[in-house]
Image (cartoon, rainbow, N blue to C red):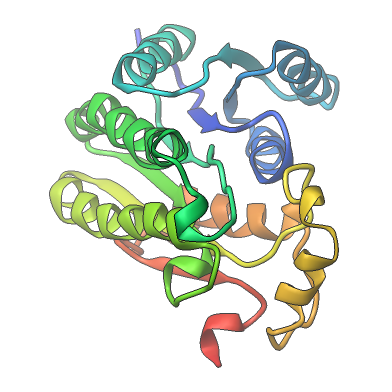
Length: 247
């Protein structure tokens, strides 16, 4: 039997923006399934959410191909008593560097995690949401999918694909009650972006806000689009980039 408790699947949910999103969804009484590669980080994330009174489980996956995406969807449906109400496609990799230095292995890794995994998670879960007449999908994009940045061709291209898929899926599943939207973050200080050092500050300085975002600031926008507060928003891309794409 379907559960009265909503279930949310958050990829890349064991750290950074994904973990901040999982925390906020759990605070709303939503059963959160966090997906990640690292079992230790996953266990800590789940423990933290449960200690705060939330309901959470960890799903281990590298989300590198269609088969792994389907396996995650299957496990999520089992843990969610047959339903996933919210899908947050947050997991991603972002190697930076000149186009000529990117290898075919780099290309395949970026597009597998950033595009292929979300594509097949949606393929598995959106039709089930449509059958119930309700669901929400939020794709996490990036501001560098909207303008050219030297050294970010591969990452930006993968997220530009996500922006188009957001619109396509909104057209495909929206008439059946499934809202699909995207959040487009600017520079955000997370464990993953720490390697950028001063480069993160320099990128952030180009925007009116003049600073990097915190994971919580991005998560607020994701949770807004994932819940009924955004009930009339379909196919939108919400820029949470400190104003960078506005100038």
